[in-house]
Image (cartoon, rainbow, N blue to C red):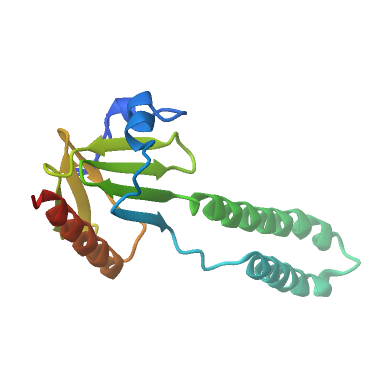
Length: 184
C-alpha cells in the first residue's frame, strides 16, 4: 500500500460498505454524546452558480465562432469547443460530488467514535476509549496544522478538508472534551 509521508491512515478493516457490528453496538446508545460534530467541506459553488458558469463559458466559447458562420471552419471548431464545455461540466460536477466528504465525531465518557463518509470509496469507522486517545497537530510540508487522533493502535486524520484555523479550533474542542472525560 502506498502512503504519503503523513502518518494518518485507517486500517484495512475499516473499509466496509455497512458499519461494522462493533461500531453499531458501541454507538447505539440511549445517553447523548458529550461532544458531537459533523464536519463538511465548504461548498462555494451553488447550483445557480454552476448554471451561470456553464452559460457564461458557452457564450464565451461561441462568440468567436460568429466570425466563421457559413464556413467549413465553424464545423471543424465546434466539436472541440463542445468537448471543452463538456469537460468543464464533468469536472465541476465531479468536484461537487467530491465535496460530499464528511466526518461525524462523537465523544461519550467511555467512547469516541469517528465515521468518515468518503465520496468515491467505502465509509470508514473508528472507535476507541477516550481515556487513551490523544490529539496531535503539527505542520508538514504539504499541510499546515495537520490534525490526527491516535488511539486503539491507530492514528487517523481529522478534518483534512478544513482550513488551518478550523483544524486548530477542532483540535482545541476535542482536546478539551477528552481532558474532561479523563477527570474522575
